[in-house]
Length: 200
Length: 245
Image (cartoon, rainbow over all chains, first blue to last red; front, side, top):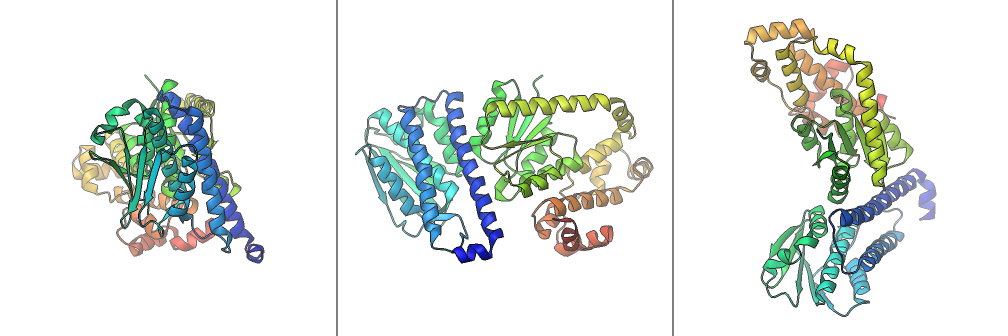
């Protein structure tokens, strides 16, 4: 790798420029989320935990991005393994509660663009805060078809998830913006809500 | 009346945040996510200033818009971007923005940049006020309407019949008056404007020649190349090689 970098310093420069650009955009997203929180009077159940979780979402992401590119000469794309990231981040969320169940169905080969994966992690952080405010159990199921990642989620105390939006109407703006950022679609069912994202 | 600001940004969180900041500070802000939406809003929303993300759709579409605004309108614009490398800064300078905001930004950064840009715009309008009046009165109202129509639709095929309709004159009267006031035929004027925009895109963007041809309303790469050679004496690819860093 070192030899390759010495042979292609301009390529290294390009990679560093892109990484710096991505990092600043990621920081901007963190700031935007905090500013939107105050602009929309979004009251989190645990503000501090939400911010810490977002920082860890970012940390794990860069960690995995760095590791997945370490063996190559220089990174050729910005896609990383969905399954590896989710396992790591969900394990992190579960380290502070036993009230999250998750299942990954046939996701071992799926890869997602780094920025999209970060937004997905922020969506999970929002869901976890909803869970804490309900003092409830959250179930997550990740699956996919050709181009779409599907995320089914449900809370054990909610009998009818068709009314999920009404339940969190005041807190919904950030969640909704994050889903739309990934061009995601909501599908409200009685037993669960399915989100479908065209990010694969 | 509130000052109208157009936010051109495809990151929904960032655009919503900026809109909240602007609304809180007494501006009327609208959001666009693409080149086409922005061009349409110039006409419908009529912004006084534009905040422009460089990396729209991850393909530098913001610089294309900047390039368009620089050559086609007098609306000041400020770039918002995470890019701070010298190459990008040099590239965006050629499109003459009135400001440059680096991400991450604070609300005070946005407001102070906007206030400064609006103040400078007002001052420059005051300076050139008399000159502007002279420029404006250079054209009759029907010709001005036709020129505005060309400006707004430069990315499409523009038919003379449409210009005649917009002017409200008869066909022969319009063609005669257009040549008299503008100094060239409608066809020649549209052709020159398209080529000016093509040159700017070739210089300032990474768009492929095929994309530029399509953006300017040409249905094939070869018809655009022939037109460009006729206008500039060299092919689009040679032009790009000659003028790009």
